[in-house]
Image 1: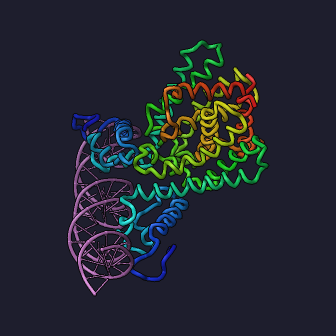
Image 2: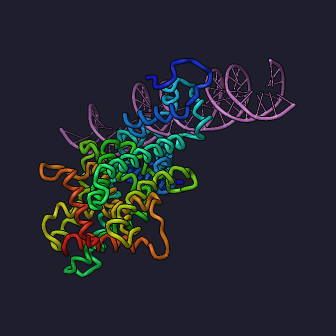
Image 3: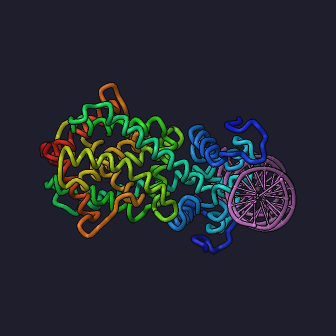
Length: 199
Length: 199
DNA sequence: ACTACAATGATTACACTGTCAACATTCTAA
DNA sequence: TTAGAATGTTGACAGTGTAATCATTGTAGT
């Protein structure tokens, strides 16, 4: 069950990171319900109250995990961008959509937490909101270069379409068949938007 | 704090409905975290173990509340449909989108629970999945009549776009300004889809 | 109308979890 | 070198979900 720190120094050294990692593992295994502060502490090799030196409460730990998730999502989208020709705007547009969906399907529980209301009051976790905006910025750049104004609006529309598809897939609300695959629906959705943007 | 049953008959009569109602109230007030089984029981004027005669566990009560939510959502969309001219397909299309977003903004916590993973294993709550499909069916009908094939795919695309916009709005992830209103974005999104569908 | 049984509700109890207060240890800056 | 800040531990408490057992009421079949 341990995750980090098998030595027994009184001070852990990087307990905060270890807690986030352990929490992420529990999240992946059993969803939010599986994230148990005391278990997280145990996995990090530390007493059950130690986490309170790094997070004011459980929600703050979840927020830190979610922030990590947004960073991973941004990385995934950046990698996708880098894998297509830098002047092919439509290819970049598609690559980001697929990367977003791919991330969601690969990290369902994490994805849920990232959009579980933690950013509603932005002052609660300022860095979380900042992290969440980075992936938005990536898409914004591609749309600006490929489709033009109104960039902001088109970015919101695209983000919504992909995000909604991702979440409905996570809900198992979209029946998949041989001719209705995830990739097919992503392509169809993005193509509809491209056409709708007049592109 | 009471919600129902001030008389003190041993048998409540419609405890199940009372519990759902009380749970919904707590959900609206304090989100999922505010839904406390014992408090729900107290609100219904019943002992803290009585709910277990109607729901195997807390999750099942939440599912029942969510099911009620899907019914309300369907009603809202049906009402919206009835409020526009029955032969104006695009108007129906728009009306349903606005109704969906309106419902989400009016019932944020409920909306979250409706899409909190309860339908992932459909066998867990069969009637919940059924209820969730009704609103989908409404949109399907409108799209079939207005835009034609591929109907199923276009319904998924539209549903995703609207659902994603709704959830991102609930997350406070979409900054609103004087010229970027909710209704404006809904219209822009739907117009993009209409154009993308070749309509 | 009577009676067994099903349905529903109450009491009691338990384990788990988040959180706080008080105390211990270690690190660091003056 | 040492005082105070950081960090970690121990112990305790209240709240919550849930199971076991018992109590009451409704109802179907005679």
